[in-house]
Amino acid sequence: MTDIVNSVGQILITEEEIKARVTEIGERISRDYADKEPLIVAVLSGSFIFASDLVRALSIPVDISFIYASSYGDSSESSGQVDIKTGKGGLNAEGRDIIIVEDIVDTGRTLSAVKQFLFDKGANSVEICTFLDKPSRRIVPIEAKYMCFDIPNEFVVGYGLDYAYKYRQLPFVGILKPEIYEK
Image (cartoon, rainbow, N blue to C red; front, side, top):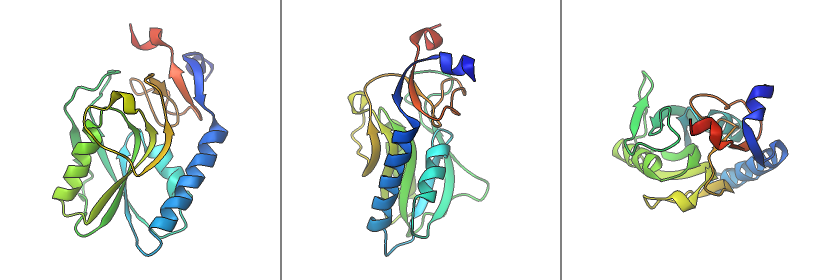
């Protein structure tokens, strides 16, 4: 773990700050959906830690599903092409109130595509809950109703976010040293 931590130049959000904010967002969603049973759609792979902590912070019944959506691959930059996949059983969005749980809103391309995908599958409503928001990078206009942290235009890892499939297990969010991804 020391090698992984040494790749981080600065801790941006601590483990304690994350826990407090996820609890707040869970309470807010529970109030907003008190009379509904929303479908939580966690976008893999980056959101899995956030989604896990978030659903445990909810006090309402929810259904949970997972999709894979990516435009990054092994790169630190979005390709602009969004690949969306559901599990073997598919995804039943018909007439559902859906909350997309995402790790980060960056350009907005991925979430815009996922949101449209869910509406095309018959969703009644679709809201976005993101762990991180990086509005300075937005290309496609999209907003999250629920957002934990607004961050600067830095390449971050930890708490589910990765670079080349590494660093997800860090309990905090840190800025990755440029020499790691500028090779």
